[in-house]
Image 1 (cartoon, rainbow, N blue to C red):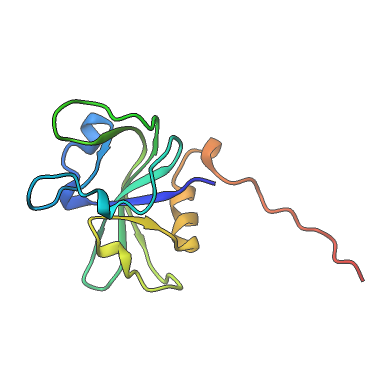
Image 2: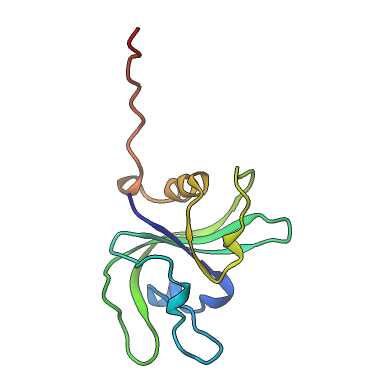
Amino acid sequence: MSTFFGFDEQNSQGFLENNIVCMPHRPSGEVDTHAIVAPIRRMDVVFIKYNSPESRLHIKAVGVVKSEFPTGAGQEMCLPVEWLWKGEKVLENLDEALALSSNTFYEEHNIQAQRELIDLLPPKYQLPPAVEWPIAA
């Protein structure tokens, strides 16, 4: 199963046009590696989001990381991404509070949110149908 990482829309200028995601920066200009919960790996799902005042999570794009090796030059720490879905999807009625989703960058742990993100991807990235096993008496 892939890990899911959310990036704030306000800090994602150029991500879609350049097929990348870049790590956030501290006010000093350094890459904020402290904000990274876990390493982003090839085939992880990344998404661009923003939050509304009603605490709804708005999804703007969903993609898959193509490589663990940074692309580009300079101070940016960016990974190549294939953006597979772009649009506007509002996630409502999530079981858990969206405590982390207001961060610039975070790892998404909410299973309901993960399922909604997977459903936006092409079929080859989606989960197989659930198998119902007979219950032994």
